Length: 195
Image (cartoon, rainbow, N blue to C red):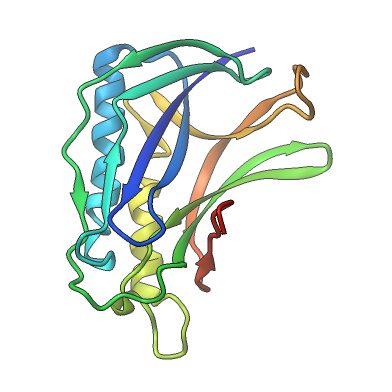
């Protein structure tokens, strides 16, 4: 099965941190390409920093894993020079530390009768990202779609959603290529396993 490149974004700077977002890309990438993709991931977060409270950080991890999409097993890894850390600039006015904005990753792939979809949790978010009715403001939703939509096809690689194997040791994992990214209208709450 094809190999996927796994990039992790380490999130910190709030009570309950750390957090992590994982993004997968398809097509072979050399080290220079991996660093280009990492730079574009950073650019996506940087374009949204005005919606994150001051002190909240997003850092693309220096380790990029190459996994087998069928099994999820590590095939190799690469250490890259990561881009600069992104720091939130919205000041101290933040919503609950559990409140996140959500980027929905849509694909055309159907596995076992269900469309493969992914999510990226963004936050915690600042109160300035919220509309008066408690939803995520339309401007922020548009900014999220634009920021992560820019990762759909970059540096010769496609952003994908990985569908894990159905059981440990199985080799029925697969992936769907992301066709669109949409900012969800309602806030999401991501709970830690430690809660």
